[in-house]
Length: 246
Image 1 (cartoon, rainbow, N blue to C red):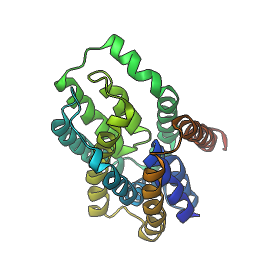
Image 2 (cartoon, helix red, strand yellow; image 1 turned 120 degrees about the vertical axis):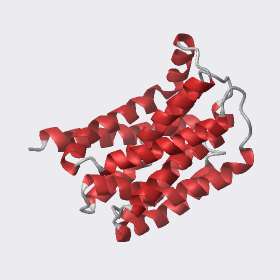
Image 3 (tube, helix red, strand yellow; image 1 turned 90 degrees about the vertical axis):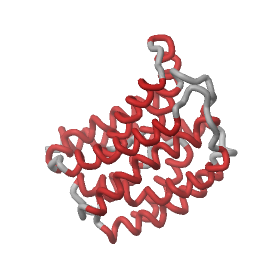
Image 4 (cartoon, rainbow, N blue to C red; image 1 turned 60 degrees about the horizontal axis):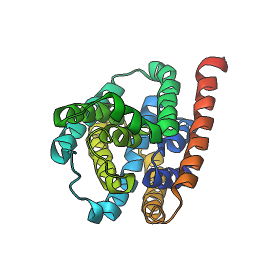
């Protein structure tokens, strides 16, 4: 179960994000407390994300309006802050927060294509603003991370008119930066459940590399529809689990 969930999660992350919608429930189903499950899921998905980043690295270019290096640093620092915040959150509290985190990610997945245009109309973002937003998104990425890549794309659309395909390599690099700091934190503080994490991670490596390769060929609407269906289903399950099952 965990190997399959890792493959699907890595595959989804490489295509459109949202892999944690699959891997986190699988970790919880394996008997891991929610905070440890979230931390372990992040560690397990990290190699798959790194594999995707390697596939996309040759397409990484400077995007007009996007301060790449400052944003990368801010995202990494935010990822560390988010990881520490997760560790300090009791599992009982995180269980109650998790459905709303999933709901936030689901809404972002559904509204993603419209968020950029809406933000561009209402805000005039500059380099400092985007770097500050990247820090906050890094915190979210280190703490939970669902659909954080889409949130980044929406924020970047305020300062650049580049299409999603051109921004995708930068998205993966930023998400990887936040996850790098979170993974180092989780490992260093000993909150990772290693047997389950390694099983999930092996599947994620294969899924992440294969998803990045297929992502260049698969129709984007199909990928988005499949991701949204999974996200809505898992969100409903977790709301039931947290507030209705008892």
